[in-house]
Amino acid sequence: MSRFVSSLSLAAFYVAAILFVSPVQAGVIGYWDFEGNVNDLSGNNNHGTAGSSMQYVNNTPSAISGTQSLRSFTGGGATQVVTVPTSSSLESINDSISISFWMNSNLADNPSWSRLFQHGTEGNPSQSWMVNRNSGNNRVNVRVDTSGQHNQNIADTNAPDPVPYDNNWHHMIFSVDSGQWKKYVDGAMIGQGTYNHGTGLSNNQPFYMFGRNDGGPDGEYVGMLDDVALFDQPIQGYQAEYLFAGGNPLELPTSAPKVGVGPEGGKGYWGIREVYDSNSIDSVGAAITSLQSGNGTIYDSTSHNVINFGNNGQDGTGNPFLGGGGNNFSQIAHGYVEIEDAGDYTFYARGDDGFQLRIIGETWDSVTDLNDGTAVIFEDTMANDNLGGNVNGYGVINLDEGIYELEYLFFEYGGGEYNELWAAQGVFTSFDSSAFRLVGDVDNGGLALVNAPVIPEPATWAVFALGLVGLGYHARRRRN
Image (cartoon, rainbow, N blue to C red; front, side, top):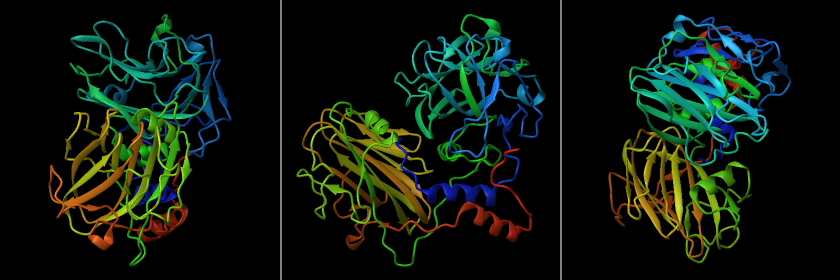
């Protein structure tokens, strides 16, 4: 899903981490930040040893505060691998495992199936798991070996990842949980599915980073890694966003943060960004990729109360699509909506030719598709992708009172564009004109968009919060 996340969202995550979770996060097996060593910061003493040919380099993702990452080079072998000896905590991993890491590499230096991480022998039969390059393509994959099924390459999404091998930093998470897997790239889940869990993943082998298959033909990963965190629990969407934003793996939030109420009586607006590209915007996936790349023009965010763009390229208040409408473009709207009465709500999206709607940190209870059968519950996303024309669908979700962050992506393929977003309290599978109102159309009874509240910088919140609880100084980040 595209990322159009304000500094408010990141601050909310930092506040949640400081106020509500302990310094050492339950479920963390190991955390390595590569600041001049391969020491484990989790408290489990899963310290590693870097191969003699590896180097600590001053090149890190911009989201984190460290100054060094660890780099391996071509040639392979034990001198290019990090080895973490087996331990009771590593051997306890059986049903659930999640690994979060930053990678910076390229395709040319990496052989097919090169290992980024490996825990287990890969033998048949065995219980092991690994993260590797998927064959000779630009995707990253998880392989699972277990009783009854050897060599399951389970987390290949059959479509290009958002450029993980392009000499830029990208954040990856693979979450494997008792027969279910999820894959996150740069904070967004891009794939999920099932696998044969068998007897599980537990084994007594060392944990390798940058390799290794015991010197086998598939080779070691060549490139940089940073901020590697290993959990014995599945990762949720809001936690993936938190980690992508530079959050501390040792302070992983355990519930989705809610945004505070905006100014009294304040009226919010949609912030809208739009991308035109007649050559490559031909699906929701392509639209997401373009928006993630930072392409597009931003509307004056004070101009829009509702999403109600008609066939003539105008919305209900006369605001045009940025290009005036046309072929092959995508648009994302971002805002904060207030729920005054807890209960079930149905959101209705319609347009031409696709949409994805997220309520950040929440999961849809059900989705009804009225077109081509492609509307799905995809983690926290209601989606429909139909190049044949009109799309519309209903998503039901249960919400408490509070302020929720919405992200709504629309894409147009060909002419005849229109785009609308409605909501009604209750459960609906068809449009009831007496109940549904355009989101943000407060004058006609629609859900209120509220202005994003101004939250102090995270450091200010930290001092304030810690003064309340009397814990003394507690750094938000964890670097040595």
